[in-house]
Image (cartoon, rainbow over all chains, first blue to last red; front, side, top):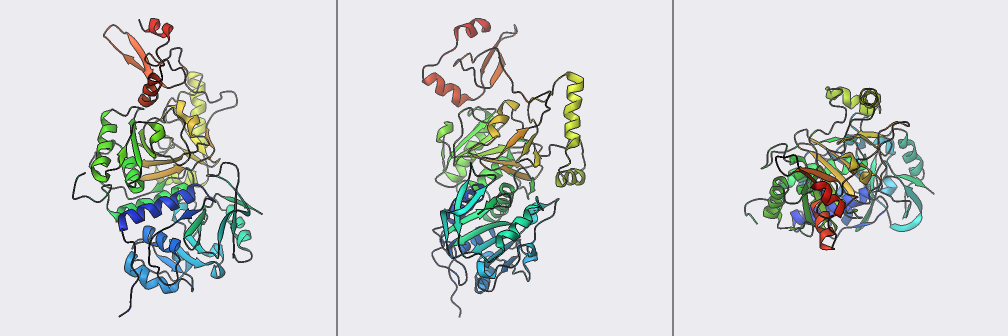
Length: 192
Length: 289
């Protein structure tokens, strides 16, 4: 008998609260979003990542997991009825640890006709902070927003810059660190 | 509150599908995301797209305002407000500044919106190129290539035929310099309120099964020409009830002798002004006689 961690204690309200948190995070890149539920965490996912999975993932969305996140597969199958994809390019949602992040171009970037078909990458990093050395500009930001994102692999920003040329194709990334999240949709320009 | 329905009417599976569409819509400003629009307890054309968007975002701590042509007390607004009162028990308001979610048909309130507020627009036809190109495969390709010349030609033909751009509502805009977007049938008077608004703007088209969005602080430019710049409507009259000269005025025929009056379309704005002691300008009363 394998013990399975619980999902949301209150599926309707907890999912609504988590959705509004991530909606606000994507609408206002660089703002930190906080997640209070679920109380129990599956192996391999932090609280923010687990909340996003319970809120957005179901039988219609294949999920790719990096090795550090892979222990959550049974939990995802049980609570979300999610299929686990064999490769990043086959996934609508990808959960990855920053140190294991595959090249960004390996994810599904959508097509010019249907850019919404792209993967949403949920990337677990050691820490997130507002007021860091990265300067964000673009839709959702009044002038400039400063954030700090720790622990990203070398070349991450260079790869992301390359994707800008492909717009409207692109990759939307939600960085998560434990209970907090910060989103960089494909439109956000990053300097520094 | 009516028993037997899920919170906010829609089932959780449907909400997840709409929520995924909303996140991509915000991430790609102005792009129309297809979604599996559901049957709603109101007919198509009564704002089923906006209702589904509101149902997917609303939570117990939200304060909901619903307007139809600027007014809180018209049939469509009352029906939708009652639907959500019956299925969510959330607080409702008529005051723009108290609302966290404002669902609207055909207007943006006159009171400036603030950060944290969400506007939900009811959209009949989401595709700005639809009357110029009926084929979905073609309009999708035109959006993919940002090939919007056909819209410029249409506006030019307006200028050639009428001497000005003869589009008063649903005036086409370009979002963040990329996607051509229909702002829903708001008067062009409201277009400048979309530009770099601190509020999040969500658009739902139920019959056409599309969701799109404008994030806060995003450039929204109304199409025009250098020698025919975009201009909003102006009135010689002021509101016959509150005297406002800066709000969108509805012309109302008051008898069968062609007597007319002009009043604010935004009922909350008009009432708030009257509560603060504003009244009709004396010359506008004479004009109404």
